[in-house]
Amino acid sequence: MLKKIKPFYRGWRKYLIEGLAIIIVITLVRQYQQRDVVSGLAPPIQGVMLDNTRINWQDYRSKPLLIHFWASWCPVCRLEESSIASIAKDYQLLSIASWSDDTVSYMQQRGLDFPTLNDIDGKWAKRYGISAVPTSVIVNPAGQIYFVESGFSSEWGLRLRLWWLQI
Image 1 (cartoon, rainbow, N blue to C red):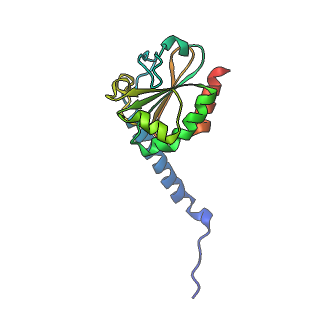
Image 2 (cartoon, rainbow, N blue to C red):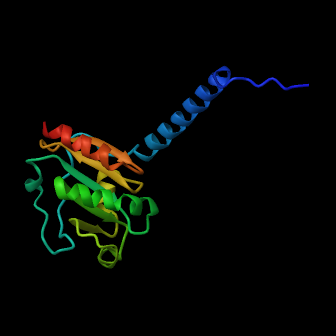
């Protein structure tokens, strides 16, 4: 006896429910990761970059700014580093290596040269309410936090948001 095969479109409800469940779980995880992230006016950042230049927070006010929190021990951060390096060539970037004490050697080994502030004790991450890396924060020219994303962010997604703030 031949077994009757159900066409794909007959089980669409099952796939729809599974897809919605996955989207809900991802959304809830991201909301949990970003529960303490500050909103409104971005806290001014002060310090000395890895290249020994001082951060002048006022220099970042003329254009959109990507503040990227990452760590040298984070595998997802490694996936993003080439995208962040590429974005740094076209947009303002302030990279903050949080909870990382080997940042200089790490960046030299990986051939990275984007502007980075070493945040060994996580002081700046805490001030921004960051509890997970990588986290990308986009600040508009007025100094307001426009967008926050914890976890992997695509280069084109970050570029699109930065471009949107320029027009």
